[in-house]
Image (tube, rainbow, N blue to C red):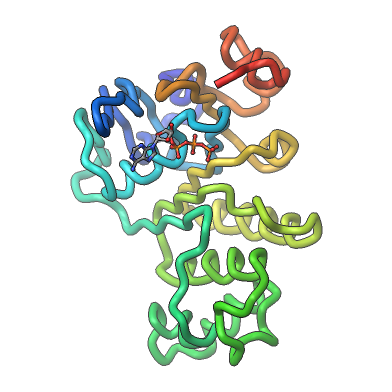
Length: 234
Ligand SMILES: Nc1ncnc2c1ncn2[C@@H]1O[C@H](COP(=O)(O)OP(=O)(O)OP(=O)(O)O)[C@@H](O)[C@H]1O
């Protein structure tokens, strides 16, 4: 985990998790997680189903009780948004979903919807959007909060290739503007395209973390190697 900080970036990490554990119903679901998330760029969390990736995002976002420490480096938690795997939207129009965050800032709402290719959907009920469109609306709404830390749980899971490429371009722009992005993905090709840093989780633990190019090309641990070669059974 410390190798994040050894990749030539000298800035303090956005957040550091120490000994972070989550236990529910007698099952240890996150097991003494140690990790430092770099401030700059996109960090991707990879790992098999049930590894604890979503739980980790929820714990960071303060949605589930945990043991151990979440250290934000400079005191208070940053402005942060979490986009869930299954979008959570208001049962109202697309525009009303944006207005919930932006108030009357229609220009910004329009710009964000346009960035997500939803500019023509403003008056449509959000619940009638397709799954992929709902995912894009959820991301637009998250970006409307101007987060310093953006947590994404498989943001392109139900998107067609063109929409996924559009979202990847948006995420690169958002990261370049200074937002720290921590995202779960099952798409290793996507991680290769956009991740700066990567971590591989298995059974509630971080098996390996570091520069994405290095981990994806030459994982050092057997767990990460087996996962990337499609041999890891959770
Ligand atoms: N609220 C909960 N109560 C009990 N067990 C839970 C709860 N939430 C998650 N779990 C369990 O914790 C484990 C990790 O779940 P999590 O959703 O974090 O996995 P994941 O790595 O995101 O998997 P996937 O890739 O399938 O989305 C799973 O075994 C799941 O059944």
